Length: 269
Image 1 (tube, rainbow, N blue to C red):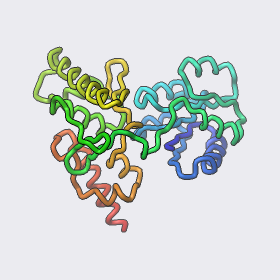
Image 2: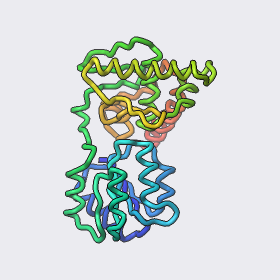
Image 3: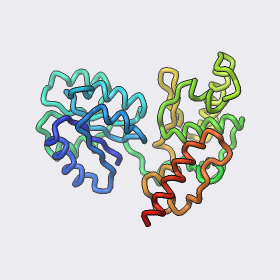
Image 4: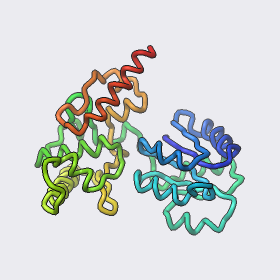
């Protein structure tokens, strides 16, 4: 699992790191003593966040709200020495609440009873090819979209890796030649609706995440070569030949990032 731990006390972070090494030896874990640094490194969906409630700069409650706004399926586990924050944690629909000092058993139990269960890659129903031309498959059959712009909108949300996108971002990347007026916003909503109905007809619900006028993709349902590549999957790395979503202009930034990453890896080898 991709797990982060945030506490302004180094001793707590170090203890949590040692526990997670035993509990989740194959996972990716990042640890912070500065809550503000976390905001600058929200670069991919977090599955679990252990957050100290009381921290200087930005407390755990504020940080949790920002993480969940960006990645709605992140499981928040609050850490604190004071039980009076428990009601606030429950109001946020936190996955768990651990009182300090916590034990390895408590951490293990919290991870075994997550509100949003992690989904193994092999069981994810939507297969996505981003390398080369963008294509989407369900049950090994290519997904047919009513509108090409609907497919492009899906590609953009996948490129954003689960981050929620507001209407201005969607218009600027999907309909860059149109003004950001009500007519264009209506078109974007039509594209989003097409995506939802297309996958609903294929038996897949909740692919699109909606929150306060923003939209994102539920990455837990995707087996995506781009995501695998970023996770260091050898097969995905071998498939990357320098091309990424070749039919879409908005993917230029990610193409440049992948080219640089690929160059650095080749240089290191």
